[in-house]
Picture (tube, helix red, strand yellow):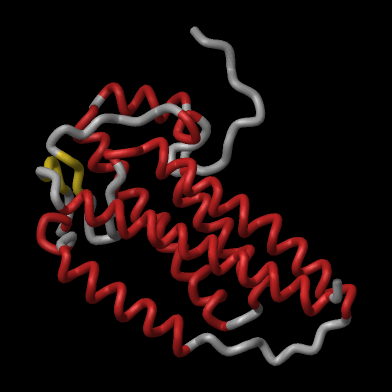
Length: 207
């Protein structure tokens, strides 16, 4: 199989994986909009509604479409292979980490924004699965996948998406404020035992 064919397959498999990711996120948003809301911080109660999601989604994907232009680069076959391997090693595990977190959250899945975060009326604190490794595994997975998309697709859209997802750091802070207000000491104990972004290589002794 030629290098061009391998690149073509990786890109299309990556696109299919992205469709699965987006479908899961949209389905979770649709389900969450039907549930009774709970504690909210910032402007979450006013902006996290269906019109907001539609407007932001339209603008975001419109920009992605406009920026879908390849880099003005001519790479040697060896560099193309390195880029493809590096991208695949980041992109696919990143999406897998997000999907693992999505399945672990189940009905607790929700979408926040940098403007604020909203919990459900029957919100539970999920600390198992990938959430036992880092506090924000889904955001970490998205960041890793976005970085992996740059060497795979080599378009300005991939750079825009990667830079855009840095805003997840601010969104995570909003969510932590809301969860701290909701769960108090339980949340504080969880934060002491589980890091936010980088997994601990060694766990300290209990007690």
